[in-house]
Length: 496
Image 1 (tube, helix red, strand yellow):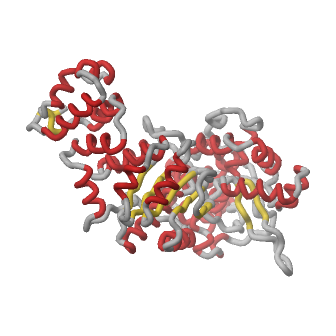
Image 2 (cartoon, rainbow, N blue to C red; image 1 turned 90 degrees about the vertical axis):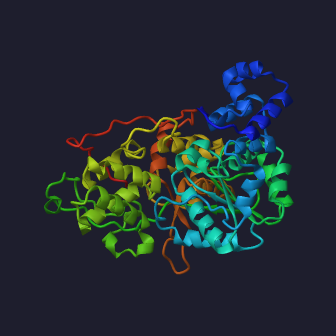
Image 3 (cartoon, rainbow, N blue to C red; image 1 turned 180 degrees about the vertical axis):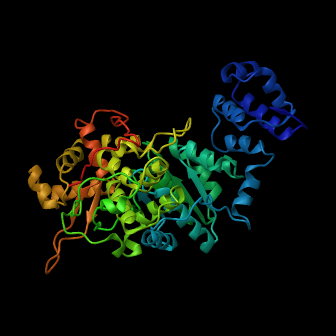
């Protein structure tokens, strides 16, 4: 801690909180592992800028919550709840965190979400989808549009504190307020104090990563909405929240062109590894293919995203038809999942696109956590999050997923009903649930005079996980697969 000019405000608040908890300085030191001298210096105002973790530890020890805790944390920066709220609702309205990169695709989804935010009667929205699909990034873009257009403050609350620290959000002026709101929501606390703060003020509250079981948090959130008529809440979640009403927006992986061009010939692979025999069929439909460059930009955001990684990491490769076809196949194998594409792209420093394609066809889970080792405290890797999503399914949905996972060709609800011996309505209910969890991709209906029924397929990455969890045991990670080397690429494997 830095010893500087006195700060009586923080010292008086800490002393009052300690006495309110019925603790002496010695008792507080023993319970918190903070030294008696450090506590004495804080209370006497000898420390102007203590570490925030120190104050949080003391607050935890004294079991402070609500405005008492928020006021103590805000006093670290010589401010107050009142001044923070004035900043939040003043002329310079609080914006959401600034994005680090442009939004990849998602224009239809962004229009839908911003339109709902602008609608007066829509006050609770939930974007739900698979880990790594881009829920937070879409919510961030929508919140930026809403903030700029409606001139409404945005209180962005990362429910995972690790995610907040990685984005630097904890250092924003309203960080103590954010910590307080996170605590109230995650622990299902009394939201009356928060309702008194928001009251009639127009506010967008974003709860990013509202995933874990929250007990009474759902009822508290609904109570908050009922108390604050001009409050809107936007949630991102990996699974639908049963206790919450409101509008649900499922977010699917990025579209990938339905057709994939022919495998590159050996003459087109000068200086790169062979990728095996020619397979002139689409990996999902077994239909004749056409070159992927025929697809419109709206049909290929995943391909464009992956090509951006190729251009940055392998500037020696030109976007020839052969390269684009290979990249399109990689996107198919990784389901157009943005985080998986980014992680796989990091391996381009080691592998050629053709080698990368061979690996994602045989062992895609070996690539989706990225080439760099995880940082300490960075949270679960994508493969673990996907495995958790599959593992957490209830037995009825798990049975359906196990039944349809081996099917690499598209299937219908009626086909699933026949396979499991279920009434079509029951099968439709369960297919709908798997769609909301993000485990299926819906494909265009079969051609016909009046159009055929909707068709579905299990995401390839999910299909890889189902055999690893055939009994859905509580394993937190998928089975580890050996990573092929650059000199010995994986054997060819076709997704048919």
